[in-house]
Image (cartoon, rainbow, N blue to C red; front, side, top):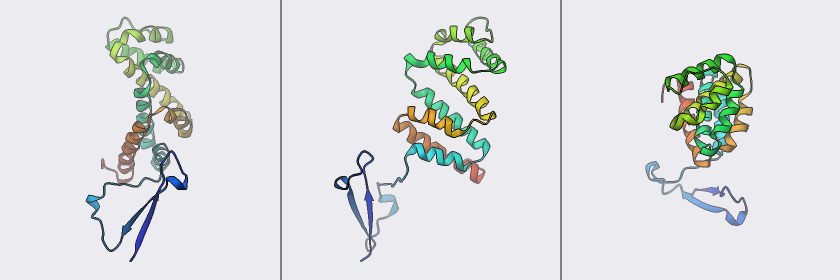
Length: 187
């Protein structure tokens, strides 16, 4: 009888005592739709990096945008203003003007395209604070991308801040982006 042995090791412990053995008999095949266990040989953060290296420039740009959005969603409320100030400080005049125009659409006063104004009105944005940070971080990321800052640096900075569940969700989204890039359609 042919037996396939799969060794699954828990993420937290790689000791042989914690290793679980599963035997799948070739004589009694298990229908695919009835198998509840999927195998994953790579951590989600590494999968995101691998996919980023495997797709074209436009897909990489979209992937970085997704990573930034995920990062902003994970930031605790009390740290939003600090991250916003850092993101705004690195923007050029064109980006500051676009961000000020976005602020104007929220009617938070007469917008001025400078760091002091934008950081000063940040708290008055209420529920729109995350969106403001997201926009500033994406603009900063676009500038870095255009200047040739490698994705590896972005991933090293942002991915460790994401929760495991968020990384898994993002890796799942990246697979869809990979298919879109490789197959030319939204699969």
